View: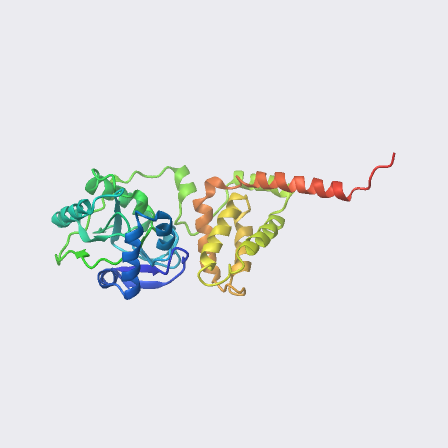
Length: 342
């Protein structure tokens, strides 16, 4: 089987722990003492204490089934390798346990027709269904899941379409009754590329997550020039950096570094800061000569991803900042002004 990525918990975005998916299923089936005990406890409180359930679930290990990730992000460029597995999530609201068992038996019955490789119980009210597929292009992952939904689960409203997200994860759980398809020649789900609707030029420009470069449009450059006439990108970034660092003093540590770069790059884009200025700033904050110690190429990949992905939001928050900045300058000026004499 191909490789997938395991993360320590919800907060972990950069673990590089890669496992064969078959080994993940073995962990689910056998479970160490902690996974077994914690899973059973969590399932026991899912109805009686949903708040504690939601909080404790965040501490469970998570699996990104789409492949080997350098860091957890929906940009395909964050992948080292793309897997041939989609893990579908089927959830019911407070079902009778017999309902879940009945659905599991149906999935097993039609497993070969549906390319189902494995089925097991989730932490809550549902099932996880691992489906093999033959798509090789991670940029078309969302389209793949749409076809799986349409062809295999069209009459299953419990199918969670959030698995269209390339970096979608599922919580590791203990299930000694996990079912694994014994067929040695299970036919993967066939992804029909001819059914994919080509993106328009505008969509391609604004949603091209996988591009390795970013170039501003003339309109964006003109917008930024107006912004900088009131407050330069450098001034704004210096203010934001102080705010970022105060809110997360451990931003440079392993486990925080990648998510912090992605967060800051996204905000820089929304604040209308030029791509080159954002890249220069973030490589200075997180690059090889900083405490974070990330490579310049990794940072460039993340910044490029964020600017391509959030292009439609470029500059939308800069006006709000400029209004606040102007009010601050006026207030400071009035405090420093000499009182008028009669």
